[in-house]
View (cartoon, rainbow, N blue to C red):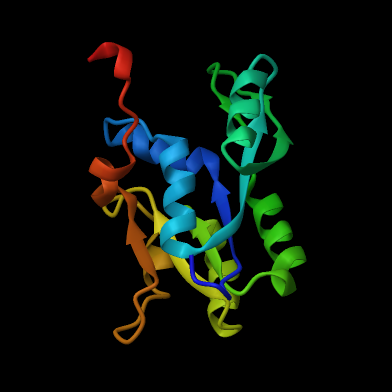
Length: 170
C-alpha cells in the first residue's frame, strides 16, 4: 500500500454476489478484501448487505475479514426470494464519508448508482468502478466512461485471482 493512500470501498453485496454467481463461480471474500487493500489501498471496505436472520456466522466472518457490514432489513417476496435493496444506504454512506477518504472504489454494475458515480467523478473522488460482469451491467454506467479515463474494472476477468476454492474438495 502506498503511504498516503486512504481509499474506501463501497460494496453492493447483492449485485456483487449475484453477478459472480451468474458467471458460475464463487467469490472468495477474503481474497477480495486483500485485493482491495493491495491494488487500491483500501483502508475501509463497507459491505452493504440485507440482514437475514440465521446468517450471523456469515456476517461475523465478513467482519473478521475486514469488512464493515452495513445492514438493511430484508423483505421476502411472494416467490420466496429475499430482497434487501441497499442502494440508498450505499449512496448515503459514501456521501457521509466523502471527506474522510482520498478515492472511492464502488463495487456494483447497477445503474441506480449513476448519479453517485457521476458526482464522484466531478469531485475527482472516484478511483474505479468494479463491475462483476462486463457483459451484464447498466448502460447508464457505460455513459460515464471516456476515452481519456476508463473508470471500469471487470471482476469476471479476475476469476483466477478471486475465486473461492474449497480445499477440502481437492
